[in-house]
Length: 408
Image (cartoon, rainbow, N blue to C red; front, top):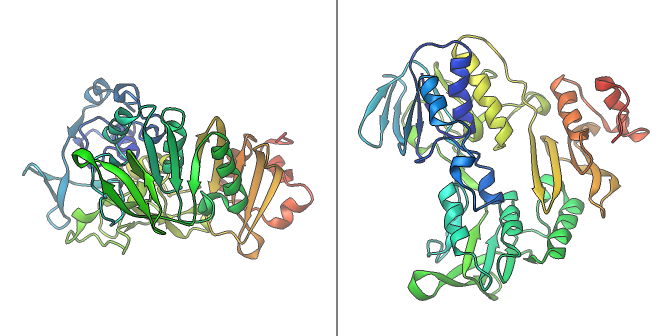
């Protein structure tokens, strides 16, 4: 069995194959030169030591008889001949293969996007590069109000002269949390010294000495001094190598799977960022979701099915982040038509209910109100559905169906 990808999904799949009793050959192929590590630390703590954030040590892989090929990428998959071609020219035969190649950070197609000190944050090398440039006199400009962009801003502020975040919309994190919470998050960042230019974008990066960025020009012509520019504007899926493989790709590069994470080609499985797979809390409809915990879950489910222990997905998306010491949780999936907030938004101690079509609660978020979102995840994983009518009189009465009365 071959695992393509050394992120959380691929690593989990490889070790689960062994845990579930598979005794054949297991090969994990990772294009990075490092063993699988906790990638979510990259934008949260750029001074990280990769040895301290490894998911498993080399001794673990050796002891589990898992072959790990580092600094190696798959360039072609032949699903008819069941053969992989690597970028070093080698070919590997497989009986079953798990594709968990993740995504590539996107660089917008603007002038100067590849200047020195214009960075993306995906790998430990990206983080090291940016961290090495930080100093008290530097000006940092961040394009994008995603979690990666905001986490980078939170890390940099206080270490440099100025941090400015450029956002396309009116508030950050609107797609995840909605307008009201997005505004409160922006206020929190401003309180900490981060500047924002919203409803804007970068037209070009302007070159200075030594091929490094010195300024950025915004879409309205405004010039901002920038010694470092970080792009946090999404990603593209790393599946180009599958072109012509016989494994169908969607327009966004994702791969359709069934509820066992098997693709339309028998013996080829996919998970993590690249999988367009059924989501239990989305009424079983497929979705492509790039969450770290979900990637790990996919790896385990894929391994179970690869060894013949038939296990369907019971996907309930869940993610979290910490911004200036405030812990945010989110569970669910869907497009809300209404957001109901319980608690004190100003004090950042709240629960938000996201109401979708027909009054169904499609998602829930919280800040400093644990464990309510985890309880909603458990509620959803049991196949239960929460409606607006269920939370009108008592927003948390539903929790008694799980653990009895609870304080939130």
